[in-house]
Length: 623
Image (cartoon, rainbow, N blue to C red; front, top):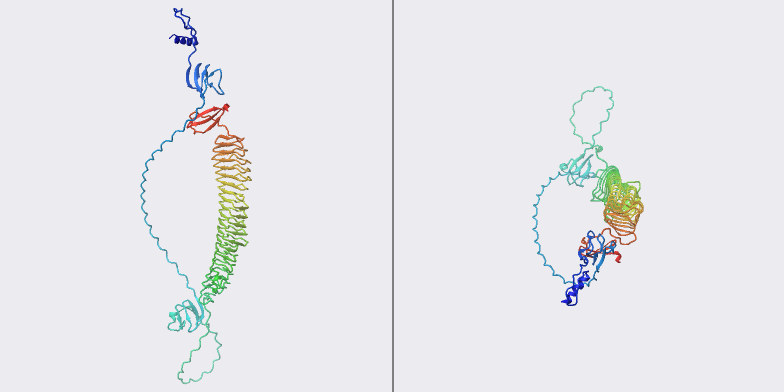
């Protein structure tokens, strides 16, 4: 017991007390004076916070260690850049990191939820009632029956309906088949023939001679007996036929074939089933078959195949309109020319359709062309063409060689002399002279381009000066560019003049770029701050742009990157101009949202996300 009393006395002395501890059994000595007060006790306040006021002997934890305040302070950290040795002293250092514990066992797989019940099938709506059938239109008027002129009637000859003969000065048309029945004077004539043109009227009587002198009156003789009647004299020559047109119903020279020809100076066709109407129409036609020719001078030079040689078949062509197809010659087949002077200069033509006044007049040797519109493919030149489709008045009128083109629109592509694989729709290409494998759609699109090759230009005033290998889509897009460019969107790349290999996608993208090259802008108003010779910039996102004078920079998302050779995400610089990772601008709170493994640098600390929504930091000076 005495030993424990000494220990207590020793502890009291250590605390500054004066309590004594004797070793003998003597009487108690006098009471000593009270010693000075011992030091105040330590007060633990948990983790350090910058807003707390700390007093002397307050104890806090900070970055894994324990510190005791040796002077009052506010906002002075126990350690780090703002720490003060006059405010804090280390009480206990942080222990070393313990060994990683073993990986816990995998949890049990959850039970699959119940399968959902399929929804009921919807009920089909009622079928609509069938509309009433339209009223049939009236039957068209039957066309006239052709007539075959058989010259003068021959007794014993066989005649078919519509055969025309002359007989006793009149013209008759057979109305039924007959043999040996005269057109007139026979009891059966009325059932076999009908009068077509009556014989001319009997000529007027000649003038009377002068009256002779009156002789003396003789004695009246006895009345004699009446003599027999004399025979009837022969009929006089027939007068000219009245109203019979020239070359009406001209007969084919090939037995069993039928042709109809109306009009003066026409050929006598030897083909089959030809119909020719008009002065000089088909006038050199000989052996063509199934031709329909209507109009003065239409198909005037055409000669066709011999019916005995079907392998060399020509013809099967329709020429309607004065001088339509007037130069066409054999071999030509399967054509339709409709319109005054349509296909005027065409010579050897097949599978070509021309519709419109003066349409296709410049075609020379043509195959598979379709021209619809007055004065389209119409000029002083003659062309060798194939498989062109032209729709619109006064279009595609240049000379040269043209094949596999589609041109739709009035007054379109008139300066082009050589074209292949062109598709053009709208009033465009007014200046181009050559066009190959290109698509141009829109009013004034590629309007001032001289030569285009492998271009796509779509939109009003798009690609006005388009260069080869460009793709331009959108009204006013790339309208000043004279070099290859890729532009999509209203007003995209609208200011580029000579900048090479730029890609601008989005309304007003690269809107002010002029001579810069190899820039990429994707998104509405992307790249709008580029105004001159900026190169190799990438701007991705609406309103994403690199700044004026900046090159080789990347802007991801809304914002402006003003540093060359850098990467910026929205308003945060990720890679600086030296190619180094750039510091962030704001420090996270310890419980800010994060995913384990995320790192953020905000001097003077580096922050790491150690667990879901849990940040820890370390002083950069520690490295």
